[in-house]
Length: 361
Image (cartoon, rainbow, N blue to C red; front, side, top):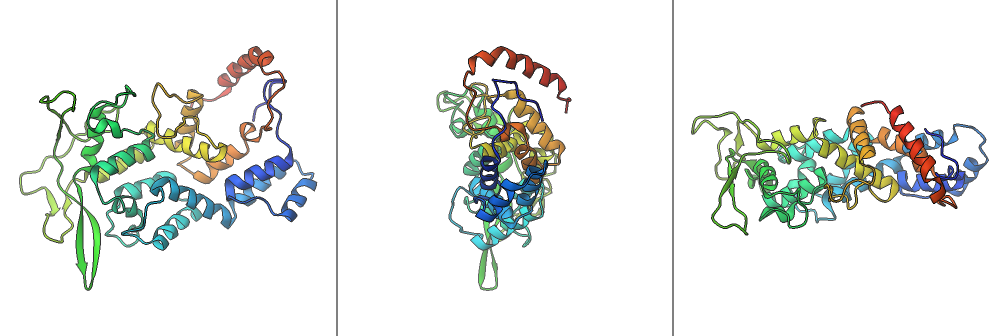
């Protein structure tokens, strides 16, 4: 925690303001009257820390964060292949167990719906119809903070960094996937099968006749090296009617691994930004899915530090939200200083000193 600069940074908010703010953000509910009275008369120096711990341990926290993830991941889509009860139970159990975010994300990206324990995680793909372009669009937005839909047919007309080659490199991970219906007795179950991958060809609608090729690659990265198999030897389970084909090399699994292993800065910063927005009502990058050089974070260094910090914490959502809730930034009073301009120079000096105090992560 850092000492506010007099006349520049707002003072720490009153207890009543903090109590209501953190209760709403961590549980989605205002404090009960008796809880508020007890907190306000408590003179302990660490009562805010104890309050945050109590809220994080409450069943209301788990339900609120599960609901937050539900909205972020599925955006109010209808339940088609996975029931609402199955999906909500999986989310709630994951939050209650404080499953690391990268583990949750990997399960979502890799799930094919065959394993009963992981079938709820497959809802992300199955209830989007397993449609490769829709999945590419939503994975780029929700997991990497980049809305690259316009780059499907050409380089983005407004965002110079959203290239058609990046879109199709990501699509190459997802395009081999397709839905297959398997009969089990009198029931039909939809699964996500996968073909052996091949390079994708694409051309810009503005430059007809100029073909480009790409293998699977993450945005801003190079194409991955894939193992080579002889024709006819590509599959563990080859495609067939009502058969879930399984290639020896799964691009979908590779995407899940590369995105969530802690080394992908776009993935790390995107979720850090989304959790920041959950607590503050607005992300450091806003809109949340338009992170690019012409729409940078309001404080790029802070976002970099948050992404690195969250990854170093093994994507522990509860611990990350605890740190935000107990930060001076979160606890600042709503009203700003009366004379903000006069404090600009001392604030700049103080910020420079703080940056020197921040250890390299």
